[in-house]
Length: 103
Image (cartoon, helix red, strand yellow):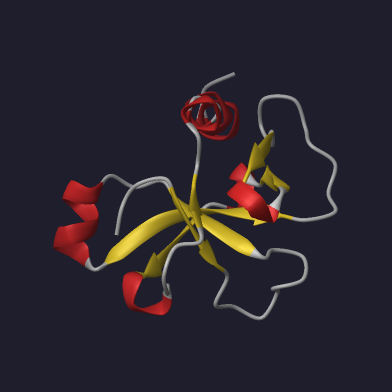
């Protein structure tokens, strides 16, 4: 399981949240059997910094729903369908900072 891989959502909200992106580093994931993911929402307007638009390869663009971050058992995730681009990876830290940073 690689950081920034995009997986089909194994949950029940596949229409609203078709994909999950793994944001946890491989060092931790390999030791815990879980990974931290951020949902990729469809048909949702982006929000500056906190919920930016990111690409999922040939599957299109989705909103990185940072405020819905959670951990999931890696056994629930099947084969990745894409990987976030370097440009889209750079949007994650500012989004996380917006959600959990001090104000």
